[in-house]
Image 1 (cartoon, rainbow, N blue to C red):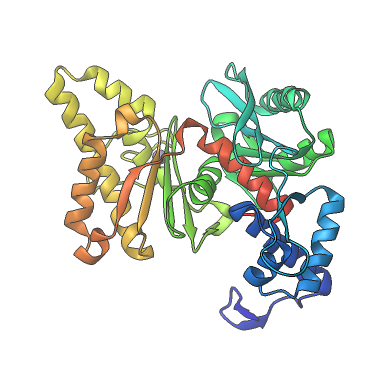
Image 2 (cartoon, rainbow, N blue to C red):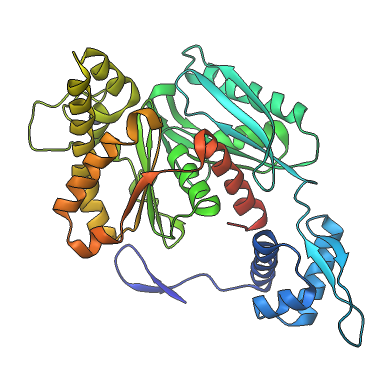
Length: 379
Ligand SMILES: [Zn+2]
């Protein structure tokens, strides 16, 4: 296999070693079981195109590790032994998921492997920043760990800011974090596998795994700040310095008199759309029509920001996560109108711009996907 390196020259990727192939095949079987449940060894061999011997060997290994269970014997339909169905023990393992993106509190939950919340906990942030904010996050993880009622498969964290692939929060201005090795800190504290990602990135994984979106999607997260994540062919786009999706500080429109942004410039998407900003402008509106015009104006700005991205990537799904009472209806309709007028009909006709159906737990569910992917290779 070859890929393009940064200079554009073709180079060989790492050689595929036998242990890599084995890990890949295990993930493939776990993925089939996670998605479909109730599969026999023969079903798995058919669906994975692996030999029956390989499947039996891998299943035996995973049965011993407790990652796979035999659930029931099928009724016999012919000669030979009736097949035994296998599944993932969805309730035997739990995952700790943490969402650090809230302005006022850090939230967390213990989930089973299907994303059902077993128990929740949250801690007030009290404007904590720096190492104190990290201590607050660690305390939340400790509390959730004490509340888990089954062995914990791993810990997933959705953090605001820019997060690299090793789980280092490179920069999260609201929390005063620069180069905080979140994954390493939590792994050392708990001895468990830990995965950390930007909160919008985590949310996009939840939408992809549990929602109805296609493999190519942009997820826009509107809260205290505004961020986005892009999935291309089911894979997160990380971009330069892991900052892909940081659309919040893109200035939208050619007017220079947009609202002042936290970054010091005027007219960034975040200055238009962040929840506190939107709420303040609505509170200042003298009547209902003026309030609707505030929503329309912010929706148009969103459309300005999205149109070139949708056109460039050929996206079919733009999913918005945030408060429905602000975003749904007038605001998203105005954004849709802009997209309709700025995109070729072929692009617009297939486009879905809608609120997520993953609800307020979207980052927690995404943190679960981080662990499933990181530990079991399930996405
Ligand atoms: Zn800005």
